[in-house]
Image 1 (cartoon, helix red, strand yellow):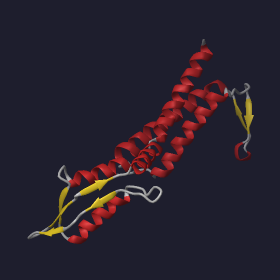
Image 2 (cartoon, helix red, strand yellow):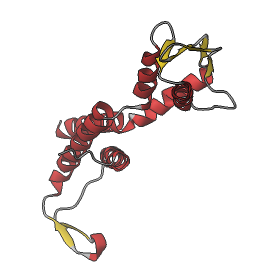
Image 3 (cartoon, one colour):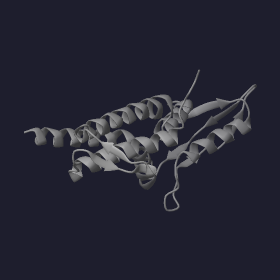
Length: 183
């Protein structure tokens, strides 16, 4: 039974968990004993507010672990998708395809993984498709990724992995705050 969660929702949950813990820790929030809250109009009393930082930290660890597993290990990140497509070309930047349409589709997909930044995108030159007996051979003569596109792909990867590093930083800050509060 394959129950892969919705990655966008999991990403939002992980980011929210990390940001709530980070905000709670940095702001120095404290609750009065027997504090009352009214979520959705239902009156609730928090009998043990000293456990709230621990609960937020556990939620953050859970969110970090789930996104690390499903978002980074089970699903291909944008950088991994680009790398897998480039590995199909090999070191000599040549590949064989069953027909010409498959070759064109491959290069459209490869170009699609590189964003257009200020009118510039990755340049892929394939001078000719060589028809063999049962396949089409393609050799890439030029493959250039401008610096601004490289920066955009790096920022895209940084954004994709944000649920992991935001939660990690939030846990470090929460641990630091707890350590100094105990001292």
